[in-house]
Image (cartoon, rainbow, N blue to C red; front, side, top):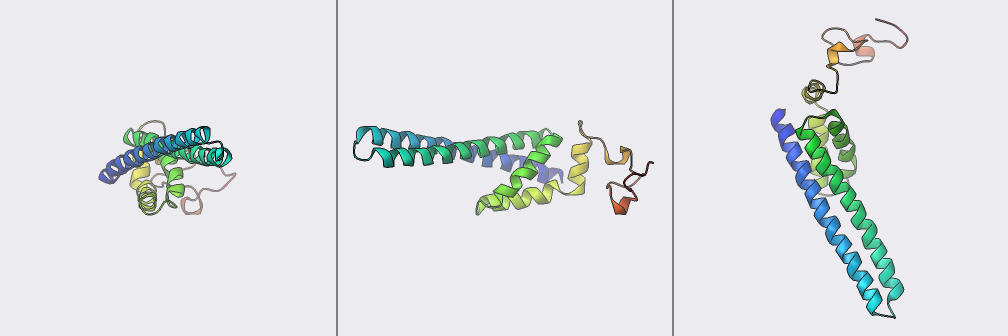
Length: 154
């Protein structure tokens, strides 16, 4: 799974870079719409509406690109928060056809795998699964399968 995790961090960095480039170019289009509106007295309101739409889309693309790029860096450093952010970004990425869908499915497959989960827990901020207050040796989950019950100690 380490190879898949390495590829996933690269894909998130690339997808984030694409989002940042698209966001910046959309903001440039918003600036061009403002310039058209300022130069033309008859198309002022329509140019302003177009500029506002381009600016909103550009800001969303910039935010998504920055979040994906940050998640890619955090995955490379094996930060547990990066795993959670990448899982959260996988859901909206599913709706961006076709490449976002592929990245979202691949992210879910890699990051929800037990071996990947253990790798993130063993690298620092997380606690290994067998050292929890309610876990038993050899068990990595809480719930009915692990024998853990709410309100019961030990």
